[in-house]
Length: 419
Ligand code: SF4
Image (cartoon, rainbow, N blue to C red; front, side, top):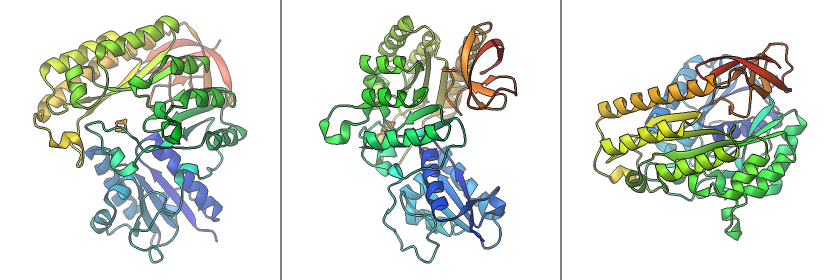
């Protein structure tokens, strides 16, 4: 009887792609998916280590699955937490049969895996199993060459390694052949794609155009604002999915400098307004860090003002988490936790109202949606898993593009009928 496996994925879309590829290797080795962790012979947890909250969640999930796994089933911990803490984590988690870093097979079994096993799998370029939805993430690069003050990712994901364009396009074609109609391109620093391939110039624009020739929808996540060139804006708009996920992190110039990042609220606003003037239906998402060391009341007011004026469709706000090995870890000016919580609440309340008002303005309009699952669809304004959805009649075919009329809105979600 074939061994059954279960993969539990935590963290970001890039981790989701890694899990897909690990699944592909296990299927290729003859293992079969279990319906639940309690039925698996091998339980794999693909962890996240970005911030303290994510690390705690990863450990909680590992301990929970250790309790729920059948007797004799193997528990393997992989992903960012395993890569970042390796032997230290293995010592702290005796419940796990193995803790393996990136690219180390998860099926080797506890005895046959030497300590500190070297990666043998190039996760980035591994084949992936057929898609299970009409959309899929495609990771086009690994690692990052930047040094944002709060971020430890480059310390464990390494320097940027872009995949060859041919490998990305082959994966996209494979996914399209199994029913994918929307590809979501991801990387730590997506707009810098190709810069590391010895030519020094970015290759994201031709990549977007080439992917758009192979699927109906292309969406981009994690765009560093200084790399949002006119050429990239043109390429995104040409795909028919004018969706801009800009990693802004703050709006105060002095604080962004302290974060070792580019830009300021006024420049970001001018960029957003210029795109809106050109494509009024463009959608924007961003994420912001609150409570970075040295953040003053003035900095906070600048961010509040930016959020109010930018009226982004979607935005996430996260408390600063001190990360060992980062520039910010050595900085003074810690913001008291209570003040951080107050600032977060104020920003989230403001953004929730902006998001809801934006949704209300869509009532009565006709939009084209991709049906992801029975009754669940998305227009160009909604990225999978992180934004709201468009609720549609259950009988619409999964994978179909349908024109619908928006009849109502409830928070981030819309209701719609066939137009
Ligand atoms: S761009 Fe900055 S925040 Fe993003 S992965 Fe690189 S260093 Fe981290």
